[in-house]
Length: 371
Image (cartoon, rainbow, N blue to C red; front, side, top):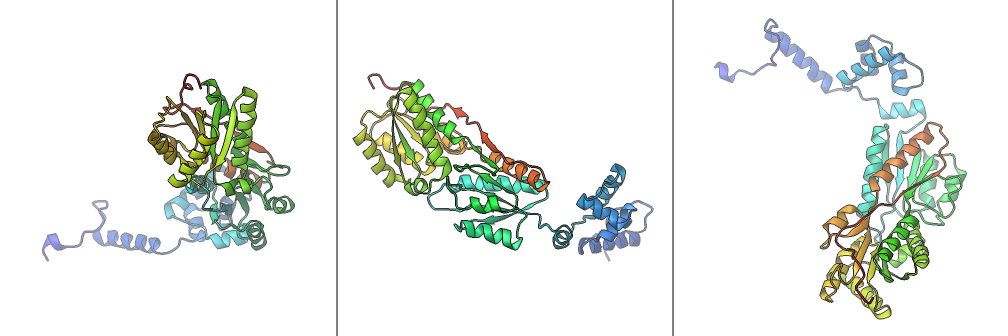
């Protein structure tokens, strides 16, 4: 056989015969093609199987040297604990349920950004995430708690009088809300401070001399459900605007060009002197800017536009928007950290509100003279 057509073996020490190399290759192939057992990890590390189990579960104190030896063997052999056996041994599933109803009247990219942050953070703590996207309300909570599907829950799309909350308070399964209900007693909540967000928007426009501002809000159904973030933003804005002597007109909007055209016409019909807009509806941002251009209203010379939205939406708009960002990743990460603390037995019933940050860009400026 021509030497160029011979099969190439793994390179090894020059004194190692080729057949030994082939044997090693076959051995590692066999190891890669089957699951490594806990007993093999123990033998490799020179410890008992129970010691490996204690290192994995953390149920007993193991010396640093032994722990490092076991962890090195786990890594070298590529050992993966069987999830089912681990759950039986610990009475835990190592799964976090994330309840995130995906409604047509909500901006899904923000919700999914939070969900991805939850999943990523959960993995760093050794948990997987079960995503529940249906609009089942209390039934979903009962199903999770009654079946043992998950060790704990994170709830999103929180309403002020959320029907899921009594079950959370009466049950013994750890939970965290990404959102703020009216009554936070006995609950752990993480959210952007939306009331402060609304106040910050009012302060920014008032400081620029605007005295008539319009709030283009989420779809009407969002307010009808008393969804926390939308109602709290509006309350905070109205309260601060009143203190500053600024008039506010709030109009919900389905989003999209046609709905925005009707809403904008109504605003200028009712308040012709409107010079400032606060938009809390991502799907209405670009239609609003397009309609203002069509009407010959320059941004920010004639009207100022401020948005509560992700930075990506603000920076990619046809006019770079002054905005208050939604800290989606921070909210997801914080929620997981508090939930993991609860699973470890720590009492963490508290409300964590992230302070809003307003970034000034090209869409806001002084109110026109005489307005």
